[in-house]
Image (cartoon, rainbow, N blue to C red; front, side):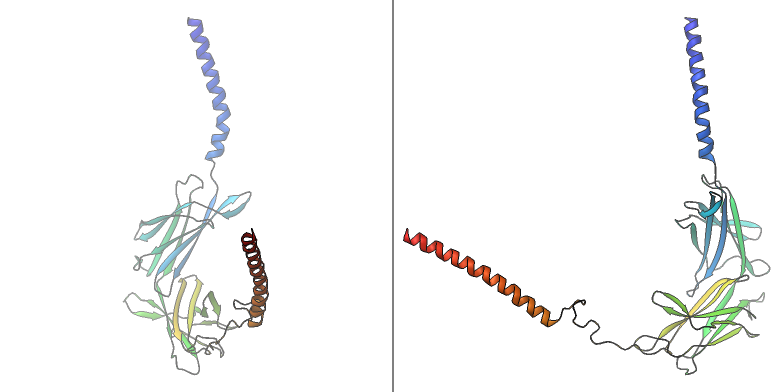
Length: 295
């Protein structure tokens, strides 16, 4: 009886060791994490909303590709303490986006710091990135009825005393808002601000507008080391008036409405064919009735 127990115990032990050796490589492979990197972008839009976008990439086959389903925790630095804002998973393109609060805690240099971290993720190694930007305001001043079509962007930042200070040598780019995107307003559409924090741009003639000649102007600060990405918009009536076409889809073979000549021709042809069918059916019915009467 004891020998049987010993043999059974030995068999279980050997089986367990063999199973553990067989499964161990797969467990180590499953637990292996990919190296990850984070890049942060900050945007202040025309409606004064603020967003931060984290672009996460992971190393695969010796190159970095967009990392899907990586959970990114966003923090804001308040004094020396990092406060968690929100955790967001990345999408198919490796992007995680959050909207920031209106008033962010500022340091002694009137700047705010946003951090993004990948922490204890099952698929990716820990990674961290942070950006530090100053709060800046971008406004557009223009006269919609000005025939010179000059748009002036004013860039200011808040001083320690709470007053706005002009920002010099900040590059502002001028655009025209369209239905499916935004287009540069001209060949040389980037202008740097002067000592007053102003950058002026003359919009060219012939910019197409709506039926009243109105279109939307956009001014942007893009990828600035101090301010990030800032945008504002304003409406004006400097555009050329859009003419309304009375008949935008004339009758044609390729148009929704076919030409009358084609419609009449088809009606005559099909009408003739169906008239022949009806005549034949009428004659058959008549012949059948006469045959019934004669019988």
